[in-house]
Length: 348
Image 1 (cartoon, one colour):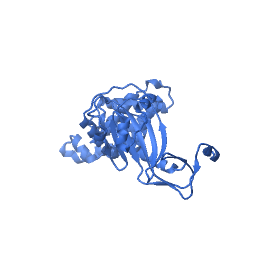
Image 2: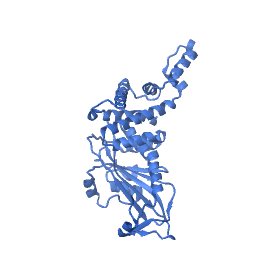
Image 3: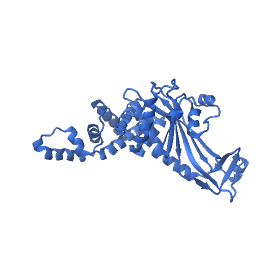
């Protein structure tokens, strides 16, 4: 049940005049704490140098969240950054992603409050916010997932932990409409130093590679990173692996791939290749498809990785069959690493 008109008026809201529609273009700022990159090198973490932009998103990295926000929006993120960081119990460095809708939206009726140039509205731009959420699912989560995959290695994980999200609109007169939502989490991690060239190339490569990642892959990876429940987190990571495997399998270039990996005698090359192609194309089993992708598309996947996949899938199957498992013993770190390792294939 929503707020009554009486309650809104007691809160200082007024009806929007019929002759003064509110027009605004909506944006979201997603702030991530970076785990796996040290923040002690100011020459590397320069937001103005690291900023990269596409039509839908802009992103940058830095040791100060206000410095990053200034580069992306021209405004500070927090009035008192030090106090905000203490309250949220977060530490630098940070990734900030600005996602923007292409068009202005208009609100012609409802309630609003205008305070010192900042407009607060009540239930006026619901459809625009829904569009923004969808754009984040399609573009933002894929980019952050790709960046994590691109900067991570089998020996060292780079994670982006969601810390805060702000949704706001900008009117043609440059007035601001605000909406806030915060989330947080905590876990152990190890950091290492990156050069500025590594970070820049990582961001640029991720922006390109994210276009090759299925939107549901980015969406479920983002859900996994945000989730605190071990069972849900494990299943989200498995969905990333499963969806990406099917996507890559469907896109395999069978003839050219087989010419590289099969030493078929020339005297029976046509018949033998046809037989192998039939076996490959007919693969429906997820494990078989994972192995075929490892053979033909994922050059870095090893026998150990395939064994890890089979273990993870077996646990998923046991969960689906209703078996009792120790949820605290689920291989969350291994599932995340395997997901990021196969996602590295989009950078090729």
